[in-house]
Image (cartoon, rainbow, N blue to C red; front, side, top):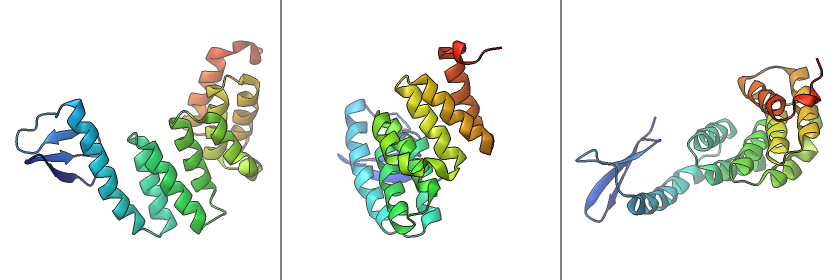
Length: 173
C-alpha cells in the first residue's frame, strides 16, 4: 500500500491509506489538522489520478478509494474509467457504490438504471443496497434475486440479510 507524506506547518505527516500520523512522533494529529491534510492529500492524489489512463488501474484505484472512505474520489475515478470504456459494468458498479456512500442512493439508481439488465453481480448488488437505503424493500428483493440468479458474493449475502432483517414478511417459509 502506498503511503504519502505531507509537510504542514513545519511538521511532516504520513498517510498510511487508513490513518494519518505525525511522522516523527507517530502521534495522531488533531481533527482540524486531519481535515487540512485530507484536502492537501486530495490535491496531490488528483494529480496522480489524472495521469492514469488504464481502465483496470482506474477501477483498482476507485475500489481502493471507496474502501477507504474516499467516495468522491472513487466516483471521479469510476467516471473516468467509464469515459474510456463506456461498456464497463465494473465502472458503473463502482460509481453506483460511490454515490451510495455519499448518501445519494436515488442518484445511484438513476445513474445505473440503463445498465441494470446487463447482468453484473456487483452492479445489481449495489442497486439492491441503494433500494435498501431508500427502504424500498420489494425493489431491493427483486434486484438481489436477479443478482443471485447470476452468482453469489459476500456483498450480495449482506444485502440479502439486510432485506430479511428489515422485511422478513417478504420471505415466506
